[in-house]
Length: 134
Image 1 (spheres, helix red, strand yellow):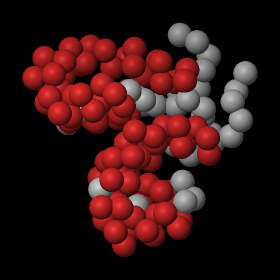
Image 2 (image 1 turned 135 degrees about the vertical axis):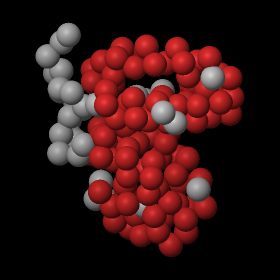
Image 3 (image 1 turned 90 degrees about the horizontal axis):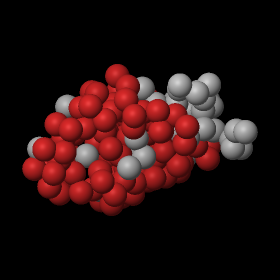
Image 4 (image 1 turned 180 degrees about the vertical axis):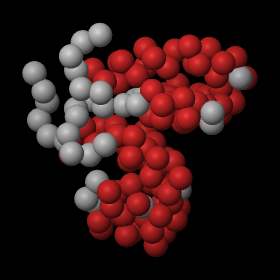
């Protein structure tokens, strides 16, 4: 294991895996394409979902290497997005108050904004957390 900061949590990964047939754990670990495939195929007809039970540790390690640590916690933001995304709470947590309020008033921009955030939340947090580490 490298000395990179632990940006993502295996515990959160496994909790999201419980809903993994929707792709939520794959989105969490920065895999939006396969997350979308899992969403539309129920975790590749549940087979991919079961296999992912064993792949979560490596997905967690990859995410730790890929994303920047900092003041914003990925796990907190992902829990807020997953359960309160239509209310924009995750955006408010990131300091994006205007879009957070807009999400609150429009049901997450009619759910399209929530879908966009599932695809891009890790990158948004990484950008907010500052310059790339060496």
